[in-house]
Every structure is written in C-alpha cells, then in structure tokens.
Amino acid sequence: MNITNLTVHELVEKMKNKELTSEEITKAYVDRINNKEPDVNAFVTTLCNEALEKAKEIDSKREAGEKVSNFAGIPVGIKDNICTKGIRTTCSSKMLEDFIAPYNATVTEKLLKEDLIDLGKLNMDEFAMGASTEYSYFKKTSNPWNLNCVPGGSSGGSAAAVAGELVPWALGSDTGGSIRQPAAFCGVVGLKPTYGLVSRYGLVAFASSLDQIGPITKDVTDAAMLLNIIAGHDERDTTSYEIPKKDYTKALNKNIKGLKIGVPKEFFAEGINEEVKAKLEQAIETYKKLGAEVEEFSLDIAKYSLTAYYIIACAEASSNLGRFDGIRYGHRTENYQNLKELYKNSRSEGFGAEVKRRIILGTYVLSSGYYDAYYKKAQQVRTLVKNEFSKAFEKYDVILTPTAPNVAFEMGTKSNNPLEMYLADICTVSVNIAGLPAISIPCGVNGDNMPIGMQLIGNKFEEEKILNTAYAFEQEYGFREKYKPEFKK
Amino acid sequence: MANVSKEELLHIANLANLNIKDEEIDSYLANLKDILNFAEIVNNANTEGLQETIGENDKCNVFRKDEVKTFEDNKMLIQNAKEQERNMFKIPKVIQ
Image (tube, rainbow over all chains, first blue to last red):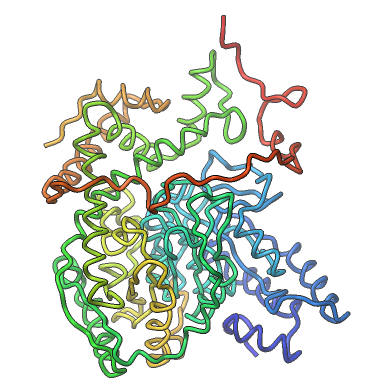
C-alpha cells in the first residue's frame, strides 16, 4: 500500500478498519520527507521525531479503547505564519528567525484538539508577501512537478508539501491568492474561506482586512473536512462571524443540475495563456454535460481590484509590521546608539527587500497628501468590486475563472520585477477585496505536464456551493488518477 | 504620472523606521514609480458616490465582558526578548 498517496478521508477509513495505525502513517510521511524534502525544500522546521512519538501515544490511546477523534493520528503541515506554541514560527523572515510562539493560534488549537500531528512548519514568502515563495529568507521551495519551477506563493511550502506527498494536508493563508495560486501551480486543492469564517487569532497579520486561513489538500473532500475542523466563531478575533457550525462534507453530492455558473469574459481576455484557456474551456464543457447552466457575462474588475489590493494590502502591512521593533521579540540589531537607531537598524536588518518595499509603499499611500488619491480611492474601489459581485450573484450561483493566467514559472524569472510578480495575482485578489470564498482545483495539465488551476468563486458563506461544484468536476475528471508530479530536474 | 523624489523616499523611509542605503535608492525609486503608475488605474474606476469599505464585514462594535484572564505562560512571552532584566524588557535610555 502506498500510504502517502492516499487522501485523508481514505486514511481515516483505513484507521477505522484497523488496516493502518497512526504510527504507520506518520512513519510513511517521515520516510517520504527524508527522501524528497532535499529536492522540494517545503519545510522551515520539521518535527519528525516529535510526530512519531505522538503517533505512538495516539495508537495506544486508541488500543486502550479511549475515545479519540476520527482524525486522531493524522499528520498535518502548518504554514509558518501560524503560531504553534513552543515551536519556531518564523514567517520565513530573518526578523522572526528564532521566535518561539508563546501561544497557539486558534486554528492550531483546533487541530491539536482533534489530535492531528504537526509534522512541521512550511515555507512561504516572507510575511506572506509574494507569489512564488522565492522571497523566503531561508530557502526557495521547488514545485514537485518541475523542480526548476516555483510552487507559487505565498503558501508555496504548503502546496508543494501536499503535492509532493510530504504531508497529507496543510494549512495556508490567503491575502490575495496565497492559497489558491500555489494550489493551482502544484495541482492540488486550495480553499480560501469567506472572510470571518475562520479565526485569524495567532495568524501573523499581513493585511488584516484581507487575510484568511484555509486548507490545502489532495482533494475536495479533504478540503471540506479540514474546513469542518478550523471554521467557527472565536471571541479572540472580533472579525470572526457567529454562524452555526456546518458539516461541509454533507454538501458533496455531485448534483449540479440547474446550477447557474457565470463566466466573466474579462478573466479570459488579454494575458491568459492559450493552454490555460483551452483547459478552462474544456472544464466549462464538462459542467454543461453535468447539467449546469453556463453563461458568459461581463465583470470588468480584475485590474481595478489588483491596484486597489496592492494599495490596501501595503497600507495595512505598513501598520501591522510596525510592531517589529527589536524590543519584545524578533531580530535586534547589535549596532545602535539610541532608541530610534535600535528600531531602524533592527527593522532594516530583519526585513527582506520585498517586505521593505511594501512597507514603504504602504507608508507612502497613507501619508498626508496622497491618502485621498490612493488609499481612499482604493477603499471606494473596494465597494465597487463588492457591488459588482453582488450583482453577479443575483444571477449566478458560482463564478468560474482561471486561478492564475499561467502555469508555474521558472525560478528567478520574476523575482527581480515586483510589478510582474504582482500580476500573478490578477485572477485571485478581487475575491479577497470582496471577502468572498473561492476554491482552486486542478483542471488539467499543459504540454509540459504542468498543472492548470480553475477557480470557483461563491457568495459569502456559500462554501457548500463551491465545494460541491468543485467536487462534481473532480469526480468526473479524475485529475489525481490521470496525472502525477514527476519531480523533474 | 507618479513621481517620487529622493527626499520624499527618504522621508517616508524614516517614518517607517527603515534605512535605505545610497546604492538602494535608485532601485527603490524605480520600483515605487512603476507600482504607483500602475496604481493610477484605480483613478479610472467610476466610484462616484460610493462609500469607502473600511473593514471586510459589516460588524461595527463587538463587545465582550471585560474579564481579567491570566496568560498561563507569561515566562514564554518575555523569553523572546533579546534583552531582559527582572521580567522586564530592556531598552536603551530614552531621556538623556
């Protein structure tokens, strides 16, 4: 049995039938990490020994007849901007290189409550600012489909680890596409929940009004199961919503007869790669065959959203990252005469170039004289984008677009051009601007065997609809049975 | 066309508590100019009469009881500080 190839729902089933123990599963992943991590570089911190110990503990609990969760003993990977008590949480930054989180994020607590086993902390772009994971201070993560290509970002470590079967599932975070775009580049499933569905307590803040934690998994069922675990109101995050707990797996019934899917034609216009477009068009045909009503419409917001996004995200980041001053935690310079120098030198040494660039841009757009022209205007554009989506959802249940205009690009080709890197987010940012849920699922590969992602956007708190729409395609298309990452060098 | 001067850049960097080295100034200016020119696109959007969206949800004030809770592991909180003394963060002298 190839354990690491199984989905989590298959692992759960096998544990239930006593075909597999947690130790066997965890051991299989540890072996896989030892074998493949040198090629993929998905982890900032691995916790292999601790994981094996915990697996044994859980197996004995189960054997002794103690009541444990169905997920008890399943390993998980966590993006390194989510706090894990007693474990280094670095945000892939020199600034937090030796920061030991003194408490758990709410999502971490929820994973531990289910007795999931933390296999390690996953690499990312520094402070989640980037679209390729090349801006990590520690290492560059490779895409398991082609090791010379980026895994996308900023949750590149999470997506690469799931695609390369180094973890069975993982948590990422998404501010402008950071779950969906790497999921698309790595041929896995990535879900960005509605803003407020999952608590952000203990997620190191980048842009607080846009950030959201979500699952990166092998298939849609696993995504629904991981969402079940992490969703829910938290009084420690005042922006989290009080809505009744749901079982998202119950929505997965493949029945999409009569479902209205809107396809915004602007997302298929200039800049979209022809092979990406062709696969999306095939997917649309599949949906028609399954009984959905597909219609093209106009949603001309992508470029406005992207510019508004970079203004808002950088403005919020410049404020959020003000806390890193070298005093209470984080990097502290050795070179200072007074307090101002301590601040300035600690920050200048601790942050990488892209983070500094965004702090400066954010400070600029918030500064007197420019506030109205940029920040205020961007906040109005945000209202415009929300209104346009609201109008669209009066007509359609789900909106279908590519997740990214292209497949994974080669390392080093965009890292020196910030603006070009920003354009990688063009299909995904509008969803964050409007606070909507969206999922990316693989819908084929290009001529070089690189995966192509399809994004399904839903109205607020309609995760069930997009999950089932994704599930219907996944079951019909069978991506995982057809294609595998080859670790091509 | 957005045009940021060197003086403006250094002023902004100082506000953000960041140093910019002389050899970095040109690339920062070029990047900023590129990005701000791109950002001009927002000015083409028709936002007449639209309110600003401040936060992502419509919640306004969220209240909870003002209860004192003891942070269970306060030692761990302070352990991340590079300089500390008697359970306090140590900083250089502020008033000379």
